[in-house]
Image 1 (cartoon, rainbow, N blue to C red):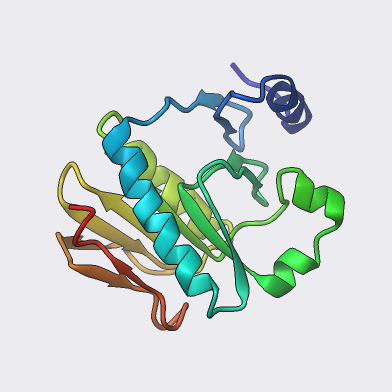
Image 2 (cartoon, rainbow, N blue to C red):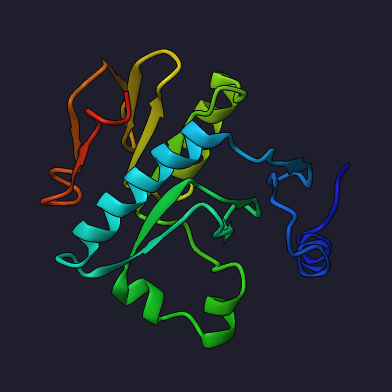
Length: 179
């Protein structure tokens, strides 16, 4: 089903429990609820990002936030971070809606039902739209993929941690409990 961004916003406002995304070409994708292990892992990730945010000048977001990307897509990463100055430049209406910006940092956590190729494409879309760093964490395959603009994603097998340096100094995501 292909719809416009305005129709997507209307659909979401009328269906508060719907978790969906919109591609840049208007394709609607429904997001299945996660199982217990994915929810627990995502909680661990967002907690660590929020703790780092207390020291950094930015705002952290959980998986329920949809961002309106520059290419017209409306995407919801599992966790995200935006610099405070970019967030504060938005109007109150933009902050209350689907913020019209791409986060600097995004995390995708692959659940057991996710296709790896679709998660990789989503990460590449975030990078193409302005993210400076992205982590795709895949507990199923025991691999973490690091995305940065202008480079091929780096893949690590079961790393103990991922560092945000140099883009996000001081950010370290402990993965020992995620695996």
